[in-house]
Length: 174
Image: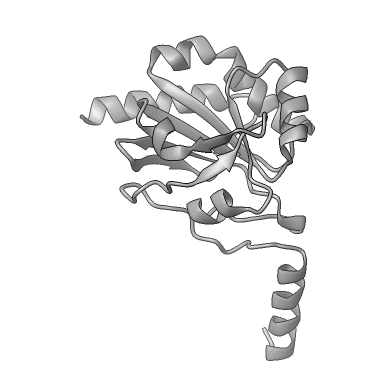
């Protein structure tokens, strides 16, 4: 790419909050410890969540959009199985607490949604962003304060099955 075009592309991506080349945290890396508001505006310290056991931290672009709804409902519909495996679910997007609360209430989501309006959680996990700064769909399992699994291709309707398979693999490797 010519230098002028590269500079233009970099400027446009910065303007729209895109970070297509972010490098997600690798397996074995320490999981980020931040405090972020949830759907009720209450601060959630991720260290406290990680201390409860295996934590699924999943990123989605925008609350109440079709793909994000399918993904959240997949997890909602399998919450009994996930909890039975000791998994705590946390969803993250750049939505406001009010948007996250409306999403959680409309679809009866029984897990925490973090309102990462400034993108600090997205950046800390190294999740690439789409135009306007929306997070790409990605998932991480955190175990003992470290990244234990990462999916850069998190599916929407079958996300819970993907997570359950990853947990089975983790347990088999122990």
